[in-house]
Image (cartoon, rainbow, N blue to C red):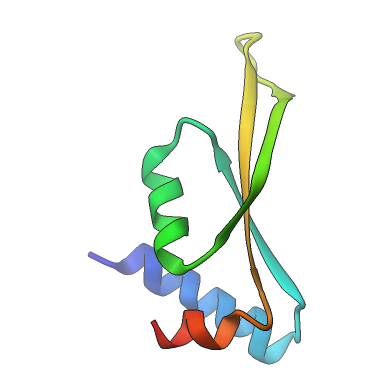
Length: 80
Protein backbone atom coordinates (compact mmCIF):
# COMPACT_ATOMS: atom_id res chain seq x y z
CA UNK A 1 0.00 0.00 0.00
CA UNK A 2 2.95 2.33 0.43
CA UNK A 3 1.76 3.51 3.84
CA UNK A 4 5.01 2.40 5.51
CA UNK A 5 7.08 4.40 3.02
CA UNK A 6 4.84 7.47 3.33
CA UNK A 7 5.09 7.37 7.14
CA UNK A 8 8.87 7.10 7.01
CA UNK A 9 9.05 10.01 4.56
CA UNK A 10 6.89 12.15 6.85
CA UNK A 11 9.16 11.36 9.80
CA UNK A 12 12.26 12.08 7.71
CA UNK A 13 10.78 15.38 6.60
CA UNK A 14 10.12 16.33 10.21
CA UNK A 15 13.63 15.28 11.27
CA UNK A 16 15.47 17.15 8.53
CA UNK A 17 13.17 20.08 7.76
CA UNK A 18 11.89 20.92 11.26
CA UNK A 19 14.46 19.54 13.70
CA UNK A 20 17.55 20.15 11.53
CA UNK A 21 18.92 16.68 12.19
CA UNK A 22 22.29 15.81 10.68
CA UNK A 23 21.43 12.13 10.27
CA UNK A 24 18.57 9.70 10.78
CA UNK A 25 19.40 6.11 11.64
CA UNK A 26 17.37 2.99 10.95
CA UNK A 27 17.99 -0.36 12.64
CA UNK A 28 16.46 -3.72 11.87
CA UNK A 29 17.05 -7.40 12.50
CA UNK A 30 19.54 -8.91 10.06
CA UNK A 31 17.00 -11.54 8.97
CA UNK A 32 14.11 -9.07 8.45
CA UNK A 33 14.40 -8.89 4.66
CA UNK A 34 11.11 -7.01 4.27
CA UNK A 35 12.23 -4.21 6.58
CA UNK A 36 15.69 -4.05 5.02
CA UNK A 37 14.19 -3.76 1.54
CA UNK A 38 11.83 -0.98 2.65
CA UNK A 39 14.67 0.97 4.26
CA UNK A 40 16.89 0.55 1.20
CA UNK A 41 14.01 1.61 -1.08
CA UNK A 42 13.92 4.93 0.79
CA UNK A 43 17.52 5.57 -0.20
CA UNK A 44 19.16 4.87 3.15
CA UNK A 45 22.80 3.75 3.03
CA UNK A 46 24.06 0.66 4.80
CA UNK A 47 26.37 1.67 7.65
CA UNK A 48 27.12 -1.83 8.91
CA UNK A 49 26.06 -4.78 11.01
CA UNK A 50 26.23 -4.93 14.80
CA UNK A 51 27.09 -8.56 15.32
CA UNK A 52 25.59 -10.46 18.27
CA UNK A 53 24.91 -7.21 20.05
CA UNK A 54 21.52 -8.11 21.52
CA UNK A 55 20.53 -11.12 23.58
CA UNK A 56 16.99 -12.28 22.82
CA UNK A 57 14.60 -13.85 25.38
CA UNK A 58 15.18 -17.33 23.91
CA UNK A 59 18.94 -16.98 24.53
CA UNK A 60 19.86 -16.44 20.89
CA UNK A 61 21.81 -13.41 19.77
CA UNK A 62 20.60 -10.83 17.29
CA UNK A 63 22.61 -9.19 14.54
CA UNK A 64 21.30 -5.72 13.76
CA UNK A 65 21.68 -3.95 10.43
CA UNK A 66 22.22 -0.18 10.67
CA UNK A 67 21.30 2.25 7.89
CA UNK A 68 21.30 6.03 7.75
CA UNK A 69 20.30 9.03 5.70
CA UNK A 70 22.35 12.22 6.07
CA UNK A 71 21.06 15.76 5.79
CA UNK A 72 23.08 16.26 2.59
CA UNK A 73 21.38 13.16 1.11
CA UNK A 74 17.86 14.21 2.12
CA UNK A 75 17.06 16.36 -0.98
CA UNK A 76 17.78 13.41 -3.30
CA UNK A 77 15.85 10.99 -1.07
CA UNK A 78 12.88 13.36 -0.92
CA UNK A 79 12.80 13.80 -4.71
CA UNK A 80 12.75 10.04 -5.30
